[in-house]
Each structure stands twice: as structure tokens, then as C-alpha cells.
Length: 130
Image 1 (tube, one colour):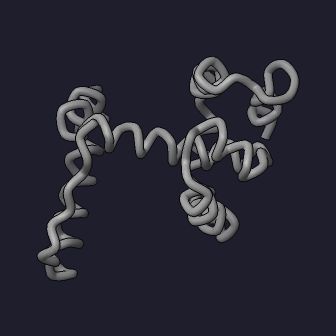
Image 2 (cartoon, one colour; image 1 turned 60 degrees about the horizontal axis):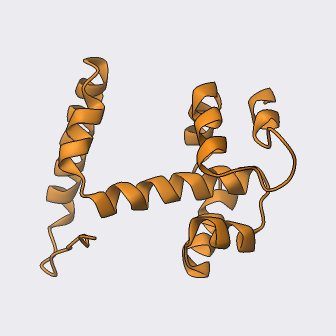
């Protein structure tokens, strides 16, 4: 699997913020035209896609009150990764993201197929009630 490479040469903060802003403009425009998956599919490496998908799954599982140990075991992630995301989750950093995800019932149906419920049927069904 290819590993993401980050240059040791740091970019000035202003340049980073400008590039970041432009990236999100492009993604927003692609989203409006229905071409997000094509763009992200070519822009991100397989490793980056997996990394993002696992982060999203961790956030959703934390929101479902799964134990950090269960998350580590199911997603094959390190305790430090789960702990880092848990701290951000506790601070409410993912509130807006979760609010948007809750609107997408198909997301939960797919997540349940990918990560079978650990307890009971339709484990994520209650999530849609919020």
C-alpha cells in the first residue's frame, strides 16, 4: 500500500491557508456539479482514502458509544488514533459533520453492512432518531 508523503519543508502559514481555502472551493464546486467522487478518487491515494474512511467510522462509532477497545479491534486502528479522535469528539469538533451524516440514512445502511453491529440488529438505527 502506498504511504502518504509529507515534505519536511514547511509551507508558510498564510500560503497553507490560501491553498486550503482554494482546495475547499474546488471541492465545493465539484460537489455542486456531482463530480466530487471522481476528483477525490484521483486526488487521494488508496492509503489516504482508507485513512479518511477509518476516521469517519471512528467518529460514528464513538457517537454510538462503542468502546474505544471495540473500535480499535473492528477497524484495526491504534489506541492512540482512537484516543486522539475521541478527545476531538468530546470537544465537539465533529458536531457539524455528525449532524450532516445523520441526514444520510443510506450512509448508516452501508456502514452497518461494512461494520456489522456488535450488539443487536440495526445497531445504527437509533442514530437516525436524533
